[in-house]
Every structure is written in structure tokens, then in C-alpha cells.
Length: 262
Ligand SMILES: Nc1nc2c(ncn2[C@@H]2O[C@H](COP(=O)(O)OP(=O)(O)OP(=O)(O)O)[C@@H](O)[C@H]2O)c(=O)[nH]1
Ligand SMILES: [Mg+2]
Figure 1 (cartoon, helix red, strand yellow):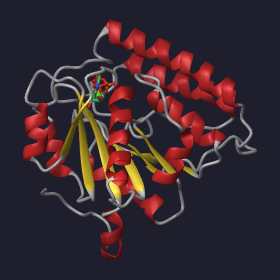
Figure 2 (cartoon, protein in one colour; figure 1 turned 30 degrees about the vertical axis):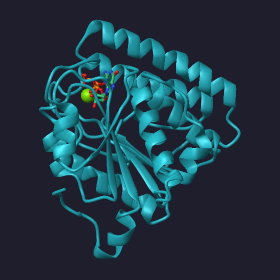
Figure 3 (cartoon, helix red, strand yellow; figure 1 turned 90 degrees about the horizontal axis):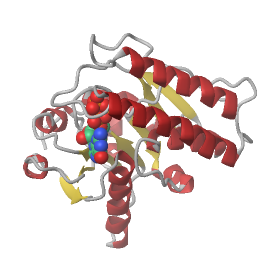
């Protein structure tokens, strides 16, 4: 796969131990850009979530491992990516050190994987989540209701688990060992918040990284539709109650602050 390695040379071998999971539903137009803008990593797994376009063919042409998940839902696709990693380990391949998640729609800048993964490779964090709201996203990239919804979710998370996040950025990376401890289970829009809440509850070292965010390529499925936004909003509120109250806040930092956006 083409791509840049934006980190220092000493990280070269470590980046072989990075696996990137890309959930994709009908993203044939954006995927070539996503895959060619990425830093070089050990493995890229594109999870084709029942696409009816050329998503799978485009992904494998660009060197990604393609796995199919017919059960719709963002979380289902991510879980399928994790199952593919487990299967590869069972086949005798080395476990990754870091697993990163990146959307297929080119809203995030794939080069920012370097900023998100490096704190984990440097062993100063176990979980790094992107924040799109520190610097203003490009006009139209995140509609007002989406910004408000993300801020509200972070406010409620702070109330319930005592940790200050500023966004639910889909671009994120986590130490594989830590990820296994979280026992992720959400099959749709609750996936990102489940990970953020459980990361606090398991005492992971958490960092946020400010990222730019641009308009997606292709048709909006969630934030650009009323139905998608309402469903996602309702699921996020439900998830805060489910994962937040169920797990308690035993590891939340005393002042409720994260290592803020860098
Ligand atoms: N919406 C949705 N996205 C999925 C699904 N399965 C995989 N994906 C992928 O998950 C990523 C995030 O979905 P998006 O539709 O971009 O969701 P969003 O960024 O919240 O909202 P929009 O960009 O406005 O549509 C994309 O790469 C999708 O292709 C699914 O069942 N529903
Ligand atoms: Mg999107």
C-alpha cells in the first residue's frame, strides 16, 4: 500500500504492530483517498458492512484485508474487525500492539493517525481519542445538532463517570491489551461512547488529540439525516446510562480531567 510514515524512524518497526480497522458501508469513492493518505501500518482491515457498491473491491485493490459483516451497525463492523484480529492471532500471527479505528468517509484526515497512535507507541497513553471540536471543523462537516449532541454527551459522561472528554471522535487508537480488557459489545452508535466510558472505568491512561474534520465524501448516513441523528442521539444517551451507571466510576481521576487535547 502506498502511504506516508509520518513518525520518526525509530518507530518504524513499532508501526508494523499497528492494525487499523475501517468500518465501511458504501464508501467506494472515499476509500481510495483514505487508504492512500494513511501512514504505513502493519495491517489495515476494511470491514465491509453489507455494501452494495464496490467498497470491498476498492479496499482490496488498495492492499487492505477485507472482511465482511452483513449485520449492519457501526459497532457490528468494529466487532468484526476485532474478530478478524483474533482469528489472525489464532493462525499464529503476532498480536498487534495498537488497534486504531478510522472512518471510511474521508472526514478525518488519515495522516492524523500518527498523532493518535504515537502516544501509545511511546507508552505515555493506552487510549487516544480524537476531538473534532477543539479547532472548528470545516463548514458543513459537523452540523450544529451534531456538535451540540457530542458536547451534551461529554457533559453527561463527566457527570456520570467524572472524566472530561470533549468529543466522541471516531478516529482513535487503543493498546490492544487494554482493548481486550474492555470487552466491547455495542453493535451500533453506542460503540464510541462505550469505549470512552470503559476506558475510564478500567483506569486506562487517556489522551485527547485535536484533529481537523472536513465534509465527508459520499452520502451522509447519520448526521445529515433527521432519522439518523435522532437514532444516534437516543442511543448515545442510553449508552451513557447503561455503561456509565453499570460500571461505576472507581478509576475516575480526582479532578475529573483528562490529559486534555494536545
Ligand atoms: N451509518 C453507518 N455507518 C456504517 C455502518 N457500518 C459501517 N459504517 C461506516 O462507519 C463510518 C461512520 O459512519 P458515517 O455514516 O460516516 O457516520 P457519521 O460520520 O456519524 O455521519 P455522516 O458522515 O454524516 O454520515 C463510515 O466509514 C461508514 O461507512 C452502518 O451500519 N451505518
Ligand atoms: Mg462520517
